[in-house]
Length: 69
Image 1: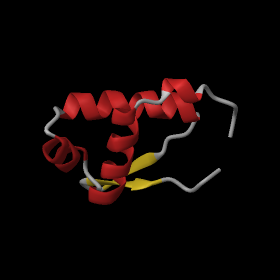
Image 2 (image 1 turned 60 degrees about the vertical axis):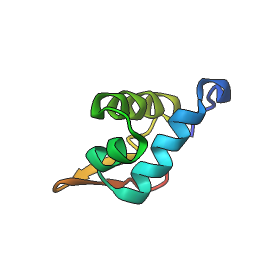
Image 3 (image 1 turned 180 degrees about the vertical axis):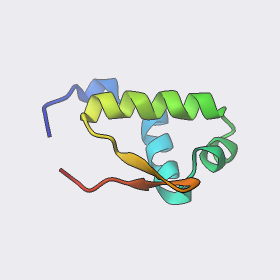
């Protein structure tokens, strides 16, 4: 993994990551966190840029975490 700026991570980004990992869908994550699907998608995109990794990939109607690099 490349070096990255830890200060670019916010508590919300980490909460989105852990909730998405637990529930497996953007929709359920948004509902659980009382956020919009767009906000979840934007947070995931930011995390992907920070970590230089896809983090999650689609699997049917849900998402699955990628393998650790």
